[in-house]
Length: 165
Image (tube, rainbow, N blue to C red):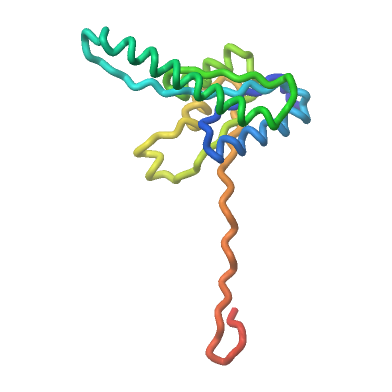
């Protein structure tokens, strides 16, 4: 069975890893003649204090600046990809929830996202947006892992003058 992929959502956090996932998604979109929807989520700090009217105006200005900066960065990373079938969106909220809602809203057939692969200990401490998206999404999720540079082979000289195995 061949999947019918027409819309791909790609969340980015502007890291090299998420940009790599975007390039991967762009390659898939080209093969499937699919549209790309690139999303950046600005995580909103939770403030639970009464009478914050004075801060509401400052927060509004801050969020507007944050949105404008994110839109500029989205335009910068999508411009080299070309094509009119690329749309962008800046959202505010919890990243995993916002990504899944965006995928549902845009009727995505696939989500392609980077994962940092820091390992189980850091995952326990920090959590993992990609894992949450995999659990919550109603469409398939393809995670693109950060490429690690290959280690140089170690050459050891033996005491007899030749190379050791």
